[in-house]
Image (cartoon, protein in one colour):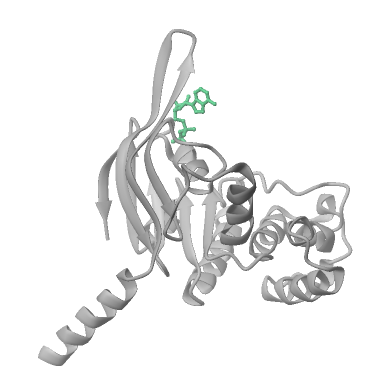
Length: 242
Ligand code: ADP
């Protein structure tokens, strides 16, 4: 009993030693005419390597804004945000873009695939933006398409895929630069329940391989299966529970 408790304690220390993202008093305020919208309102939290976190809450609670901040796609109005131990606020555009491309993968509800490119070209895109050579891109694309079960579809246009297949392409694309953190905004929002379950399974497999996953969701099974749930309301964290 004692040894088990000790092992668990040691495992916890090892896990928490690697912080992927850390926010302190983070806020994002939008202006709508004379009105101030506190989309994210002074929140603090930490996400450790290997965690699977669900961000939940009613519509307008600030979930997407928080995800955009975490992905370095939007800048906070105030507060601190560190990704991979590095403070984002002092970074120039070039440095931020490099960190975003290498450290973070993003998956959206509407997939965001480029309709004029094939499946393989879509997956390769972030790799090519990061100046990897075409041979390296091909090898990464091949292994990721195999991983998500879409090798046979590599030359297809996104328009010829089902919703679940499109989301798997989008996940492969998000992983092409081997990020440490995968951010997904309502990844099952456009999918039927069976397809959603398969996407959920894939996210769990990737998390099992060590990828840190943060997912904004209304999907109860997705939220319930997460290791930790951060609940937002009016831009504030009202629950942060494992
Ligand atoms: P959620 O993802 O939980 O639905 P959002 O993060 O999209 O919430 O939005 C939080 C609040 O911020 C909402 O009131 C929304 O209208 C507002 N908001 C989001 N983006 C903008 C923007 N670009 N300009 C003005 N207000 C915005």
